[in-house]
Length: 321
Ligand SMILES: [Mg+2]
Image (cartoon, rainbow, N blue to C red; front, top):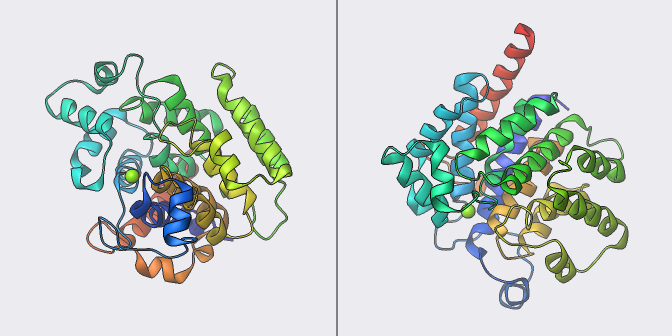
């Protein structure tokens, strides 16, 4: 499969997962199941069908900044977050406050501690990190640096930054794999475990739990109880990785599984979509979902163009290097 298709698949995968989960954000899986059955189609919610939320809006900002600077420039990225910001996309209050402080002139380096002592460990950095996972897929040290830097604008707690790095790393591993080969799931998780920082041991414990679950096939309720479906990075990044690995044969099934766990299901959907899209490429995304996506000025077509530009810049910087 062409690498370009994997770049496109990952960014569109973020949009698809975000839009599929958005109408159900915050609902628990039992009441979702009884109200709607298994969710397999995009629906209208508070927003129109196929609309994305803050997850994709911030992912667009990360992609644009990486493309313009041929790599990470945090000052530029912080400006890009402000420029792209539309409160109606459903930002959580921490990020809203961070953006509002930056707009008032507070430097991004100071914003995190103004809001939470020690910075936020929400999943807001991991949900938008796909472009960095793609751009640095062949250099894990640079990938970690990029993930930490781009997180530090709004999520400066070590667990928030590490969550973004692990999510980016999962995207990078997915880029490198051929979906036509049999996926060695144990080795995928083992390599992520090795990548995870020893300083934030929690992720290593959670990734080990993902490994065990791949062999035990737990119920969705157990996955929610023991991996989480909440808006912390540690309570959602491992869940997205599990959703992908447990359904690696199909983009569609991975996304349906992730979104039907409920909770922060637009973000878990977006992160699962970023990994599964990087693995299966654009061809793996069901047409009906692509057709449902919003396609205004900054919609589906624009996101696909961003992915193509990111790929082109990646090739150029590789040649220059
Ligand atoms: Mg969201």
